Length: 135
Image (cartoon, rainbow, N blue to C red; front, top):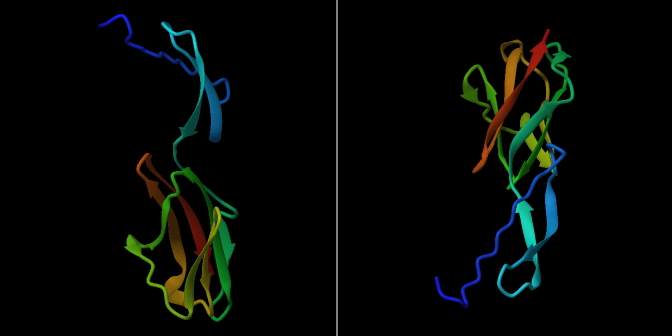
């Protein structure tokens, strides 16, 4: 390595396990002793939570299943019922606003009662939670 080579070194230690967002990081180079602001982006695998793990429903009623997904980069969210992706229609609607993901079922059918899984994935990993729709 030549005399003019710059080899910045940075070690980051977080004391809180769930820090997300943008941070300013100061790097001090060994040779030039200069300080540079460097934007740092923390990437996280999805974390899925559900508002309710059990929802009472009856045929003909409207039901909302909700999961919340926190991830960076943004996660792809999919609802699964009995190991098959939920097929949406004008009666079964998947909505996503910010971290809130809702599966809205208008006029529930008896065949739709059971376990629904909210699955989220991004380049950092995947996560899922189950909601039971029970009659």
